[in-house]
Amino acid sequence: MVRADPHLPAAHLPADWPAGAAEQLFRTLAHHYQPGAEAIAAEILDRIEIAPA
Image (cartoon, rainbow, N blue to C red; front, side, top):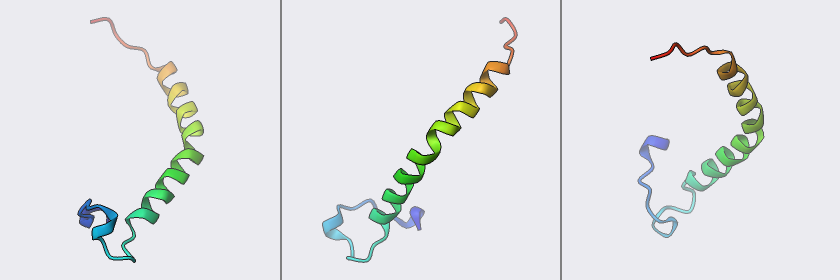
């Protein structure tokens, strides 16, 4: 459904259009998972050795 979202102002969408709820769910989940994801990414990146150019 995300790919079908026309990105119109909410006033021009049907009342039951799921974009607002989907965006809120995304923001809630991102807020929940971001600290752990950042910690994992930092740990992985700290272990990567970059060869000199």
